[in-house]
Length: 529
Image (cartoon, rainbow, N blue to C red; front, side, top):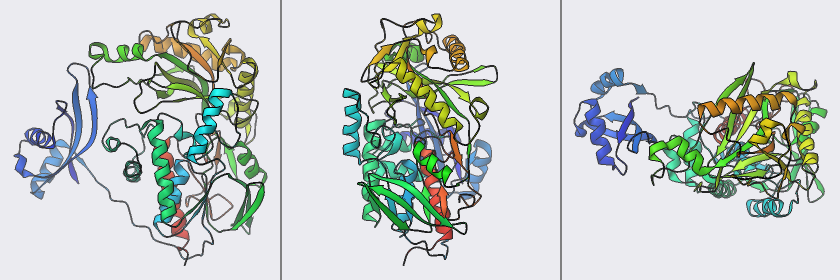
């Protein structure tokens, strides 16, 4: 246990001794009474003078006095992770499918415990993947196996690199520590809203892959899962294709971390009889404003202070029974193409660590559920695909994206000229009326949500804000059903994991789920001899 003090306001640049003195003053004790102090979270308060606001954990020399102060000020249980109890069954060659955050941390956890996993990823390594994404941005040429969704690091490698999460799990700290050790900024360990920027999450991904290899794991890129082999209700092996050749692996233990966009893999698993079900997700568009406008609106009189980076926002509303909300906000970022199929366009957001781009953007999305799309486990995939194909057609192909000013969206007319805010999406945008590629109820909910957001953040509904469509990949449209042991129902030894399996949302929660599935695998199977 530790005493937890929140809301400890300090001048910028305060050193450890000054923080210790302030904590002692708040507790009514001497600084020398403190055995240890840890800054758990740090944020900035810009409402008046810009100051640090800290949450600190304090341990005292005197245990009895500490317990008394815990009752008065609050306490936090610093829970150590529980040791893994290994199983006894032979796993064959342990396999992890997918090198996004979930698969990376599953493979790393297995490697750290001597399991020497095979990690397969359909996309390319980081260097080649970056070149493929740049080619899409410059020329509108899609590589269906190496893009914003597929390849080393998964979709998180082309994002803002946000590391905030609502889950309360001691593994979260392990994830952050690993990212910092492998190339992410160390400040992520204390910031209240940590982010790495896309360039630093890529660096950390490369570091984790190197670590997996050093620990005896094998990493195979351009290796797409093609089959799950099972008999008697147990996994017997997997097949994958690499360089046009089919490969088979005998295994009793595999973590399935395929990500939320592997639609062909969903279809293969469904045809193989793996139990899956449709799940809710959200769809909509991206909205862009000038970064300076968002910064002024959020910071007020503190705008321009050198300690303040690009401002964030999070807005929510309702349209009848549906939630409408901003999602994956990218301060000082850009809108990017996240398509994975040749005849559909989808968008996402990305920003670098400096967050110093001209625009800030966010998704504005509407909650949808299985009641909104056709029956069947893959009904949500079909719903996404129809929107993406409609957007592709509306923008006249070439992976252009349809875009519209907010004023024209409210008026229901196609945009001809963008003024005030320049769209950042590449390779290009086509002025259009987004109502033509959005389901009617989605367009109506977005319109009402944007009007409400304008009341909550003055100017958010400015006519020159730019909307770009369509945002469909917010989360998986499918859940791969697993039991209490994290194994797929009906296929023992197969561990559906992460965002693609419907059990996480975001970099950290996906990574934590990967660790949990790896631990569940180890409880069933012994390390290879």
